[in-house]
Amino acid sequence: MDDEYDAVIVGAGPAGSHTARFAAEGGAKVLIIEKRQEVGSPIRCAEGAARRSLEEAEVIINPKWVSGEMDGAMMIAPNGNFLVVDEARAGNEVGYVVERDLFDQDLAKVAVQRGAELALKCACTGLLKDENGKICGVKINHMGEEKEIRSKLVIGADGHESMIGRWTGLAPKLEKNDIISGLQYRMTNLDINHKFVQFFLTSKYAPGGYIWIFPKDENTANVGIGIVLSKITHKGHLKELLDGWIASQPKIAQGDIIEIVGGGIPVGTPLDSNVMDGLMLVGDAGRQTDPITGGGIGNGCRAARICGKTIAAAVKANDFSKEFLQIYETGWREILEERLYRNWMAKEACLNLDDDVFNKIITTLDEVGIEEVNVFNLLVVIKEKHPELVEKFQDLI
Image (cartoon, rainbow, N blue to C red; front, side, top):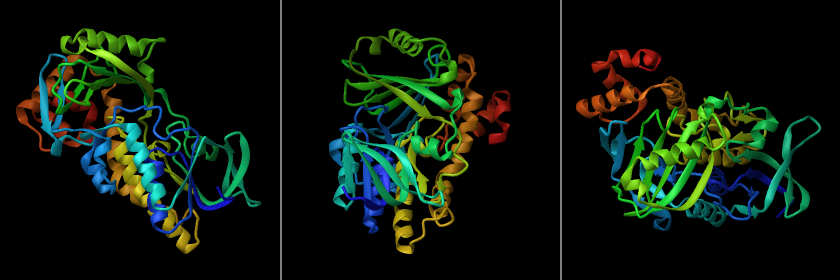
């Protein structure tokens, strides 16, 4: 590890490593620092990723981290009615179910192969600033040794609890409605349709959220629940809800739990700014997660591609100002911002919907059909038959 780099990227998740790859490909001297001893662990993800998002982000698909290729998605109402959509129309979380640890490790490997450096067990403990107060590097603790690393750019890719975002003031504290608390079991000995991901809408078991099944193979799947923090009333509530739902589903209740993971997901609005002089935020740290699904892999990788190319351009221009970094800010907002805002508004409006409404929505969508699943198209279809259901969503149509 040297004392100076063009860019230090804090966090070796998908957004951090993918940013590093494109920056290094463009000729930048890049260091990725990761506080854990292993990239990709622990897993805190349902492990779904949209094929088209990864393709747009130029992720190199490696069969080693693909557990399954999905034909589509099923949206299931409390009364058992369901809507089936194929992969091409199923929105932003369908395509692959991945082995997330292998996925993260592969993205980091590609970044290193393209010229980036990776330091494990290396925590960022602070930001360096020059005599004018501008960011000029990071303070780190690398395996117990305190050190300062100078860099022209610092990239915060350190997740939804981003210390970089907090230290700079770019990422204000999330409200309880803007954090999903998730709990997931990996289960085997299940009787499932292993070619479709499944989303269960139920105010009884998942108020302000949903339950999912992401198949890993013919009889193994990630079975999880995600609800906003404001709906959690006591310790152990999330587990009670998930266990209660599983008990109500005979084909799932027969399964056995072989792994448990949990974590938080940001589902707020995009930040006012993801850049400042000498610094950019990307991925969950940059609040680029989809507020409806909580999915962040595809969005993070798409934004990371732009971020990495912006690093390379800034190095060539020797310009690390906020003004120059608008290349990244403008680029990621063009492809993500409108949908993120619309989906946040829809998430807010859906927080208190009851099971009767969910039943009507799924039945209507199944009867009418839909070309592509997104918030706008869903509301337009529903409005035709049940205008009373979309009164609170008028601003989104």
